[in-house]
Length: 392
Image (cartoon, rainbow, N blue to C red; front, side):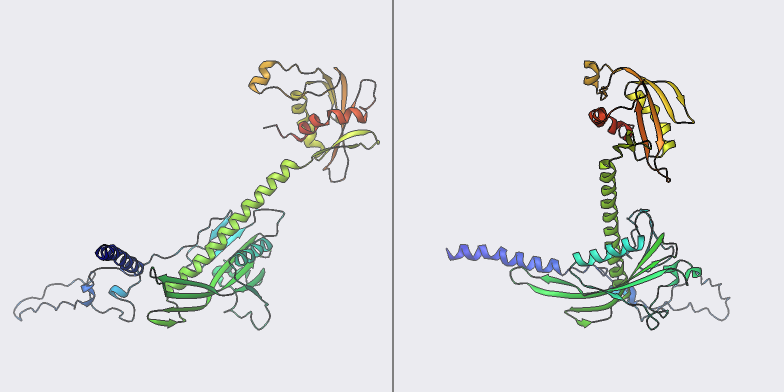
């Protein structure tokens, strides 16, 4: 019995050692033989005095005169450089820049772009559970080292224009644990960032720059508060790309809200014309509505017998459409307006100085406008038709 338990425990120990070994795999440095880093320069060929020295071409000469102050061999960081990802609509990067900078151009005309990016950044940090503090710009902290770079502004001509907002985040903490049954913290990293928003004076372009301002790392080799250049760049790029992704997500939310608002918007109501007669009121300019009325007539059983473009009057004949069973099967049947077959006048009149509202008054052959009861009864069909929702 004890022998079986002992044999069963062996794979557990092996598995634990395997997991620990996997967690310590180095992905930052190359693996293999680095004898090339220890090679000495080849000695020159010694030519006897009585012979001519051959010509030398140094174009492809490899020497040992290299910078030993940097990493060589196994200590060299082989990670690929990080890039800014312009995922959000109308976003773009600064050509030739290795800094964590991105530009946003205006997408929604009814939104202040700087405020939109500001709110997105604040929301991102709040969702991360990290505090954010605004830096108040004044004469003491708007020196060149605290303001945005020329790449950030894109042009030195804009140095005196635009608006700048700066924020600092709280600490981001990240810990890497090792072990299986008994875990231990292998590395602990803490980061803090500065965010610089710069809006051009016309307000249609805003840039965002992310800078790593504080860093602390502790591992088996000790502690450090100075990141290497690759770690610094990767941290800045990763943070910037997180914000860009959030901007893209907020854009999509806003587009969805705009579509729902347009779909639910009441473009047609029952009101009065300028003569205080009952009429339909359409949220559309007079000329635009006039041009689209023939489409409405064609789809709802009206035929135009005459028109007066100067006074914006259509003279129409109405014959109630006869939707057959085949129309319902093929989906070609249209809503029917419940009025008598007769001759009508449809008069369009602008109701405001901005030409954004138009009254549509329907007169019977005797010159009387349709009563309120009739307008209310046929409103469901008229509302859809004069909104032109099913036009395409």
